[in-house]
Structures are given as structure tokens and as C-alpha cells.
Length: 277
Ligand code: C2E
Ligand code: MG
Ligand code: MG
Ligand code: MG
Image 1: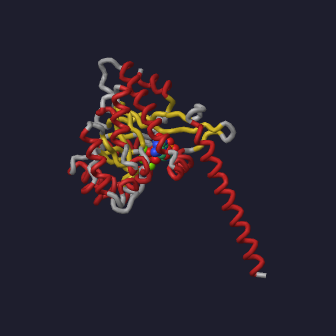
Image 2: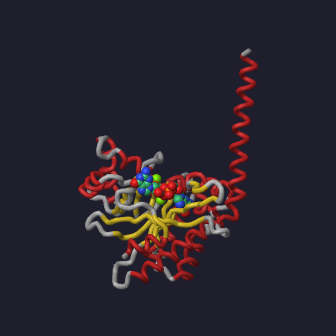
Image 3: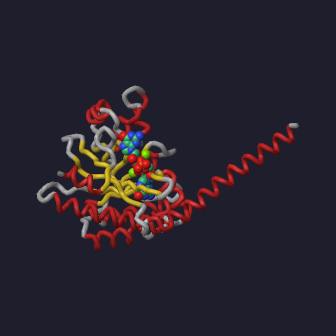
């Protein structure tokens, strides 16, 4: 009896797995031509400075509008792009598009402070080693000043290869580009990385911000991250600000920048131009 159940169970499991693998292979195939078919686009989420409430930049976030499946979350397809190596062509395309858009913001805001654009870079893009050249070419060709480009890396991108990562990041930072550590606090040894990996800022993961008003531990950790970062000369960005109270407490604790649904949802490039006024 048990054997039969076990067998059925195994077969069911295996079929589910086959389906998952199949779906992945299929997605990868479709993702390959998605950029050229115009299915991929960037949305921009505004980033605000807490000291004066001014919008100072935006994070570029990729969206895939699949013809049959509709909107597919980057948490699904970025992983596919990363595993398959597709990210090595997609990454530079994203970077290029974001820089072009940021140049157009500058043109609409004559006299106003220039806005930065912040672009997510996946571990594989960093590991390829080509990133400083790709970034340099992109800035040269689009005319975006290096100071207006920020790159967001996750801790997993630097883990295990701190020496290589540090030298790449140093080259990027020497060119004037700012580097932020994304999803900060979720990794195993965030603090020790800051000693060895040169970055300009950390983005506190939104899981900390989510409970900052209810959970004293999350508030303590957030406050500690801010103090520690500042003592190292690093700026702090909070992500996932969904309530006014979170904004207020972050501001009170000296957090530098913030983004989140309470401040502004990600919007497409045209809508973002409207936000700029
Ligand atoms: P991330 O870089 O940490 O981006 C922040 C995510 O939080 C975004 O999800 C954003 O839409 C979402 N978010 C913003 N404000 C709030 C809020 O107040 N509440 C909540 N619950 N969520 C908020 P999204 O766009 O789905 O992106 C997910 C992840 O996919 C990103 O996390 C980033 O790691 C990755 N990603 C997105 N675009 C790119 C890209 O162009 N290249 C690479 N390599 N990764 C990307
Ligand atoms: Mg990010
Ligand atoms: Mg993040
Ligand atoms: Mg996050």
C-alpha cells in the first residue's frame, strides 16, 4: 500500500517538477526575443530626500508584458535571465534605456537639480567583469553625467568574491558612478561586507521597514543600520515606505532617502515626466 502511495506521490512530484522545468525553458525562450518585440519596458519609482521632502531621483524597474500571460514579475523572469545568461545582453539594454530616459529628465528640468537614475545590476553582470566598460560606454554614448547614475547590487553579488567585486566597484566609483547595496540587512553578514566592499549607500530592505512601527527590534535594527552607515560615511535609503508613520520615523532617525508606495508607485517613462512637472 505504502509503496503504491509512495510511487504515485513520486510520479506526481516528478510531473510537477517537469512542468516547472518546462515552463522555465519556455519562458527563457520567449524572454530571448522580448526586448526586440517591445514587450519589456522600464518603470520608474521616485526616490525622495527625507530632509526636505524633495524628489531626487528614481529607481528603474523592469516590466515584462507577456502577450498571453500578461504582466510577469521581475522576481520570476530576472531569475530566468540570470540563470540562462540572457542577463548579459538584457542588462546592458536596460542600463542604456535608463540612461537615455534620465538624460531626457535633465532636459525638462532646466535649472533644477539633476535627478539620478538607479539601475539594478544582477550578480552575473558584476561577475562578468565587463561592467565598468559597459557603464563607461553607456555614459559616453548617452551623455548622462556619471554622478547621475547609481547602480544597485545585492549582497549575493559580492559574497564569496569580495576581492574581485571590490576592484570592480572601485573602478566604477572612480568614474563617478555611485554604488548602493540593495536589500541590505537580509544577507548573512551585511556589516562585515561594508568593511571590505566599497559602496556609497545601503538600501534597507523593505522587510525591516514593514514592521518598523510595530516591532521594536526592527526599529532598533533600522536605527543601528543608519548610525553605522553614517559613521562609515555611507548614505541610507529606505525602501517599501507604505505609511506616513514609517516616513516620519525614518526621517526622525536620520535616514537620507526613501521610496515606497506611500511616496510614489513605479510609473512608466511618460508618466514620470509628468511627475517632474
Ligand atoms: P528591488 O531592487 O529591491 O526593488 C524594489 C521592489 O519593491 C520593486 O519590485 C518595487 O516595485 C517594490 N516596491 C516599491 N515600493 C514598495 C512598497 O511600498 N511596498 C512593497 N510591498 N513593494 C514596493 P519589483 O519591481 O517587482 O522588482 C523586484 C526585484 O526585481 C527588484 O527588487 C530587483 O531585485 C529585481 N529587478 C527589477 N528590475 C530589474 C532590472 O532591471 N535588473 C535586475 N538585475 N533586477 C531587477
Ligand atoms: Mg533595487
Ligand atoms: Mg531593494
Ligand atoms: Mg527588496
